[in-house]
Every structure is written in C-alpha cells, then in structure tokens.
Image (tube, helix red, strand yellow):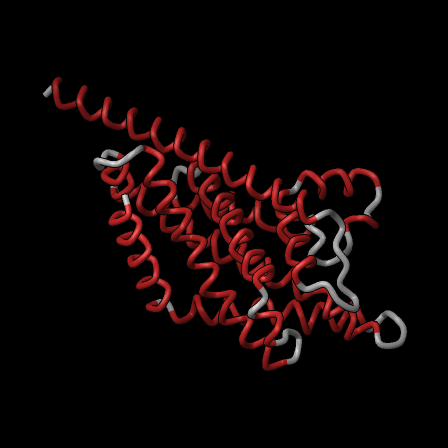
Length: 265
C-alpha cells in the first residue's frame, strides 16, 4: 500500500513541475482576485476598507488555489479512466479503496504545492507573516482543506465519463462551490436561500477554517472550528466511500463486458 502511495505521489509531482503553465496560473489566478476584485469592490467602500477587504480575501484565495489545484489534478484521474490505467490500478493487489486514497493524496499534494508557492508570494506582499506560515493551525487548515478539495475532485472524476464531460461538470461545480462559500463575503450576512446553500456547501467550512487560522483585523469566522473540522472530515470520508464504490463498480462492469466479449469470440 505504501509503495503504491509513493508511486502515485511521485507521478503527480513530476506532472506538476513539468507543467510550468499550470504552476504559473495557480499564482496568477488568486492574485487577480486579490488585487482586481479586492481593489474594485473595496473601492466602493469608505476609508481603509480596500486594505481590510483584501485581507479578508486572503483565506478565500488560499482556498481557491487548493480547490482549483485539486480539481485540475483530478483531471488526470479521468484521463487514466479513458486510457485504462485506472482499471489496472483498481485490480492491483491492494484494497479497493487504496487507489482512491492514493489519488486523493496526490490531488491534495498538488494543491499544497501550489498554495505553498502562493503563500511565499503573499508573504513578500505583506498579506501573510512568518508567524502565519509556521503556525500549526494554519498548516493544519491548509492540509485539511486540500484533502476536502481532493475529495470533491474525486467525486467529479468518478461521475465523469470523458475528459469533455469532466470539463463541463467541473465548471458547473467549481464556481458555485467557490462563490457560495464565504470566500468573498461573510456567510452570516447572506439572506434566505443563499445562506442555506452556503451552509450546505462543504467548501464554506474549509474557507472558514482558514479564517480561524488567520484571524485578525478584517478576518472573522462564521462557524466554530470544531464544526469546520467535523464537516470537512465527514465530507472527505463520504467522498472516499462514494468514489471507491463508483470506480469499483465501473471496473467490475468493464471486466464483465470484456470477459463476455472474449467468450463470444
């Protein structure tokens, strides 16, 4: 099991560092949100609100980086499904859930590599401090968020039949999940249906946990830390169970079809 995990993680890391444009976009996208959206929205407010709103956005852009990084990493899972690599991994001599665990850890690692680079940029720009970067709570929040985002990516990959199908589903999932998460505004201030949907969104609790880790002027959490951790752990477990069941069923069906086709010949 450990050797399988190491092999998948090594494969994912090699892919990340070979795709320079992917690493660059993981830095550019959150910075655009931080300075363009943060500056634009903050400009319609009074006083020093621009700086305060940009500081409020920091947990959100960190969560965004982990979300996009994990979702794009899950794209390789769909490619593996189409090429047959996933089928070979599922029938390998390890527990059925082992492959899904390996893939989730690889996606989480991909997101952590990208968010680590962003943290260094935010440190230089003054949005984070050395104390933030070495805080156990901040590191725990990043890792927990990365695993939850990897779980969301695995669910999306599990229900996608092709690369084109994954792209459509990803766009349908990723933007509502991000916009209704409290990354851009406090969940506690949302009205009616928006508040309910945001509270049902597991990514809201990921952003909120990052807010707890970076609590300061302009950054206030909406939920308790215990609730954030419980929701994220529960979601990651459900994602693991669902993805294991889905991939296992697909593998069984394809094996059965192949055996029937072979017997007819």
